[in-house]
Image (cartoon, rainbow, N blue to C red):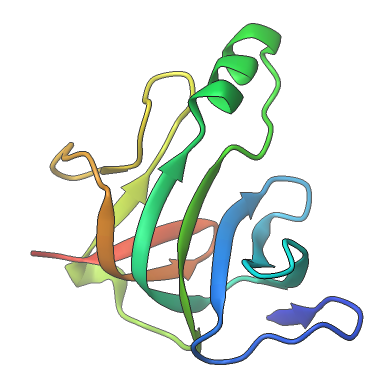
Length: 128
């Protein structure tokens, strides 16, 4: 499912910031230029990804015990697709136990990732 918001555009190669939308139970895709959410989606890919966690936002979560958008994966939108996740590792973040995104299988801290695939509320990276 890909739902474009209003008349906004989402094109291949567009710079986006992606975060998990807990209310809609999908991912929000935000245009980096406008700062506006341009789409909601369940299954898609981005590449040249940079992992960003705002420590100020994380501290606010810890203090108020209420989640807010403070962790995003920035990259270039590739498009909707379906991939086999059996040979991929989950990209994981929990503000209560972590201060950055990690490879859930190895525990390795993630800063940059070549490709991230989003599916069913989870993010995956190619196994290395």
